[in-house]
Length: 157
Image 1 (spheres, rainbow, N blue to C red):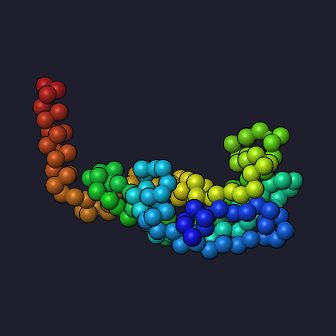
Image 2: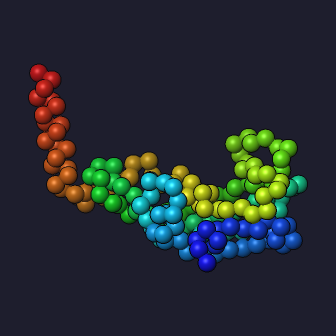
Image 3: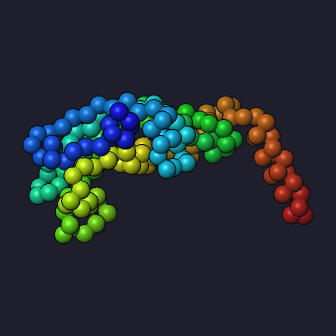
């Protein structure tokens, strides 16, 4: 079973009873997505899925683990912890317009893939400044930035 299969939920099954999933996602999950922000990681995802009013479903995600991203300061990989929970409402209806708060899918779609939800929840909950702790950045790279900044300040005079 591929990661894509693990993250695809049959919505008709959820209509009958609430569904709970526990997933362990690693580097291959992030590599399979069409994104360049998160290099890899290891996160545990617990998802509770239940029906809401009408043709809507409520996905409650609880995510805990770590991810690796590029350091904003030295461009080397930095490992960051992630722990968050979010709720995503998915509406299976052709008549409802997307209002930004609800994911709207066609009524003919009988499955829903949670991969992009999980990625976006992780990405949004990472710090704005993604850097190593003081003193842990690549010193060679930092010295190159220092040289570049010095040459720019010399040019100003």
